Length: 518
Image (cartoon, rainbow, N blue to C red; front, side):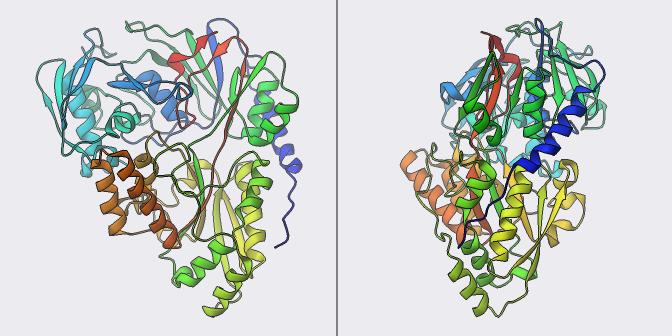
């Protein structure tokens, strides 16, 4: 098949306009030096409640407002955790985790000390199916939390779970909320936090523009390096680079297009950060949509997708094609895909299925990389006789498309370009494709009892080699279903001012409480 050539230059015009708009915001022209840190926020906030938040900026704000029993180190230093809200956190038995909370932790709003009862409420609230939390999967291994004292307790698991320590306890679903305060506002909240206990408080929020944090005077833990943190909301990666160059922010995640440029010439007094990412991009094919009822049609789409052209056109040749959900650094990574690009096979399968003149909709976010990727997919499928109509959406609308709680569109989706953060354990990357995630984040409606059984086996298995076998088989099942085309684990790239040392999590999220002055 002839290579497809698409030029990113046109997309930069929109990015420049976005940066110009950013620079015109009242009171913003240069990042403030000294006690205020200004960074890019990749989205606005909608829900700060750990049980129901959506991710992106909400995750980063959550680390500032709330505490978790433990927390992960910067991913560049390896996968390790340290006690945080817990002064003591240890394995009492294979299915019992004993904790003791820091004796100085208190809630804002005169709600008193952070207690073991708050931990119990926080965990069991997320786990309770009645609350329909998208993050309930992380507590599948949880049996109950036993309160043994005001600040002590035991987490009882149904079975041993190695991922629990690194994918549940230190992440957003493991953030502790105040039972009394949350119950007082009806059991859940959005952007008005009823009580918090972390190092920072929200000082000011200007929707779709910025959010500023200030130090929590009641915080008695390790004091953050900056008295204030301000997030300037810039949703587009290319616009973020231009905002950085205009000195509107001190740190920004950037696109791979910008990475290629900065490799040649970096802005002065700056450091470039590049590392292998865990964020997966893939094409979801709704296997329950009548257009894809015939497996031959789904397989034809898989064969038509020459992912190498997407790597060149959308990622500037700086990202590698994915072989599955699990990235190379984690156990369970596959060496190759089952259905490599073959346009002739794709056309033959469509003929066998008796399908011609097929038109499909491709839903995607409206960022520059997604738009480029959609155009390449459109060309690749067009080459085998499938017409693709691209539908671009803002973040707020996009994430409702496959959500059964937001309407009926989840049933009728056709193709969706998806992008999701990964974790430090393969289970975190695979959990989104379980049957229970249909109508939540499993937009391909991949429904495999065998996949679910293997997932549970992998969670309980402690032998790493055996876990690897399980996770490779799970990815085989996904690809065999015809519901997925794996694109890439996006290379992570960011730029930061000299003298500033960021703290980056495995999924590219930031821990602002541990940014430091180098």
